[in-house]
Length: 136
Length: 243
Image (cartoon, rainbow over all chains, first blue to last red; front, side, top):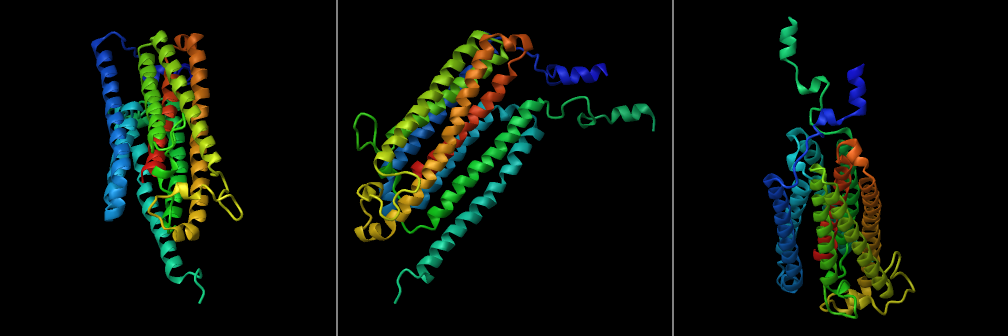
């Protein structure tokens, strides 16, 4: 029973919460340096995205290459998301089982996005080809 | 089977320890964030569905081209500033979490104050953007029958023909603004509640609550929520302002 009470009252014994780092240690300083490095990467990716949106938008629309620009945007977005989740949210430091518990359900989005965008395209097609907007 | 054999087969799933080496609260925060990710995902994907079904759609470079101070031709600049503010407040949050790991109370206080200021700055920017778009006629339910259409052409690329604009413009702008205000509003509400949580954490830290508890895990849990808000913004930014 004593053990059970400990379990409820002080989780720090179970999950190693009592572990303390020294803010002035070289390990701690390296971590802070790593955080600023990720900040730099996120900033650079955002700048690239904005420049792409500003300078390449019209060219992409005019040449029918919009999908290439958009693919680039999506890759950069997923890359940013990965850096935030893995480094800022420290998911990369969790146990493999915990990582999978988060990542695997999110793969549902792959189906979700494909199905719903296809549905949208179908509605556009049906309205343009079989719509009643131009009565004879 | 002897007891020794059973003891050898003990694994992390047999109780008494955490298989994922993670506390209950932190795991529940991850589950909450996953469900929230699906809510935001559903919003953004329905935006995509409607957009794919529309013959015409507003051009982000035309909709978001204003900057405070009377600048009317600075496409994407203001929203880039907002994005940068949110990224920086995410960074100060990680630094607060790190200070918490080191039980550095002063550091946690310092970085939490910066994080809260970043959140307030972001919300202020969003308020400005909403008010600006509202002055141009955009709101929930705008650009329907009989509405003022004088600003409508402002939201579309210059290459859109007047005929297309007249046929499809109002409907597209109507849908666009419904989604824009709903999704950025839902996100803004997350930012607002995040700021409230962060202020609570700051007060607890200053009162020495975590010193007494022996760990700063609450900073970490609120940090997860705060980073998630930043993460959602990354996707909102792409869907509304870039694609």
